[in-house]
Image 1 (cartoon, one colour):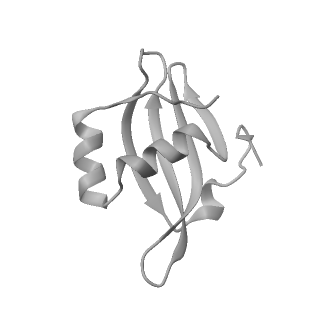
Image 2 (cartoon, rainbow, N blue to C red):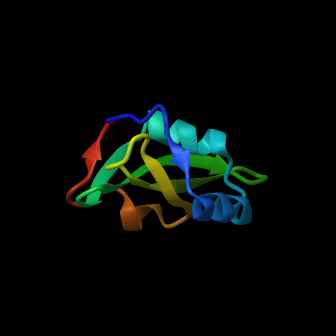
Length: 96
């Protein structure tokens, strides 16, 4: 289920700045995630592949969201090159 409106927690803002992840990148993943997994009641991780760096390299952008709030709250986000570790594991709902 796409998320079009969300709030960033202070922790998420701190980590996004530290990890050079923009709010626009977060919005893109939440509005059109390639995959989503419920981690526990009230919390989900949304993820999509994205290009980053020069030359561009494919990374997985993972966004952790408390979905039991209105609007949903982004808890943290990170980018990883270990796509195979998280991609299409059991429990993911794929939108591809």
